[in-house]
Length: 417
Length: 151
Image (cartoon, rainbow over all chains, first blue to last red; front, side, top):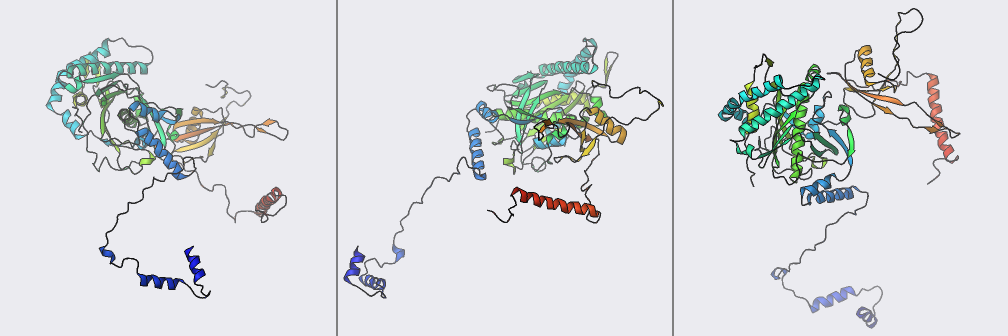
């Protein structure tokens, strides 16, 4: 308004501009401060805060997809109890590859190693070897040896055996022998070792757990003969920072699991490590698996060692994975410290020993840059006794008994917090 | 054993000492997916069992077989111009054979394709005709309107 009035009062030609004139007037009037700027106090203006930019929920873009999976994972991790978290993980049916401890397909172990991200090491870890040669184990073995021999002889000579299928007869005999030997060992050792006394034992349960590896989902189902669970965990076998074993990649298996006779099923996955939620004995100590298959046939195909390794590795991982799920860890929230367990695979006379350390659960494609891997130690097949002749056991192997007792006597440690 | 007798013990007529060929024929296929180097895919008749495949490969070709996995492919019915149902191809069985220890196999590439020099004049003419037919079909779809005319 003022400008238009000014124009009306002081008319100027079209070729002249008024701005320079006005500016000149203003500079002469000097209405603003001419003091130097450095002496002025700087007023702090608070920085503008905006809510985070969220992609639209139902668009078909990569950002939206990522955002939605993030929301789902947050939903899973925010659940207050293990029951709710496992329900959230397993409520949708989807295709799961069924992993069983026993697999006889040629070169199936490559798939097992890949899907559990495990490296297999020959020989047991140092502490277990030392423990097996310690005086406490030796005295315990000396004390229990005659009883174990008696037990085996009783089973071999006096118990009525089913006369039909020899394979069935042998498996039943092995199972019953192992049951009795384990009861004997536990009864003999629990008095002196409080971690055994303060433990729970599940017999002949079904162990189930599920996990995800590179967008492929797996369901493990195993049937151990014995599970020994304790309130306190076993100490780790090696530190998780060990660069030789715990850090690195495993050879990848890029083919479909059907190529090694591992087939899929459309199921709700199940997590059940042998007990229900609420049981205070939440840590795995030792498990015993029966190897009920035709050893002769496997030895002919030269796959016996591989099959045994598959049983020990998959059953250990499956159990520890189930226990980790019960402790509120999941594929998107990795374990804070390694979990360990010991596995004995036996048919009553042949024994293989496994130690497993679960370093990481982050196996899916979201944690592709995860450097950790799991480690499995094993000893090859060993015979407990050679044969039974004239009511006597020939070639009784003390090392096997010592190793079994060393597994049972491996002390637990309270959690560091 | 299958329900019907597939291996006749006695065949009428003389001479009795004869050489019998197999009742089956299996076809080596290029597998649809990427498979491990020791897995080979065969197309077989539906009546052929896993044991038949194993024996076939071991006895005739001396190929060690570790495991055979089979499944049957159902070929869906189609309708002809009178709306009658017909099978374009019989059902068949796929056998994924895992070879024995140390054996690998790779399906040869470009097995039946010929180079330009090996082709005869007739084949070349057929090829040109084929190409022309594709072009004609495209034109026919657009009712004779050339492809450069349009949005």
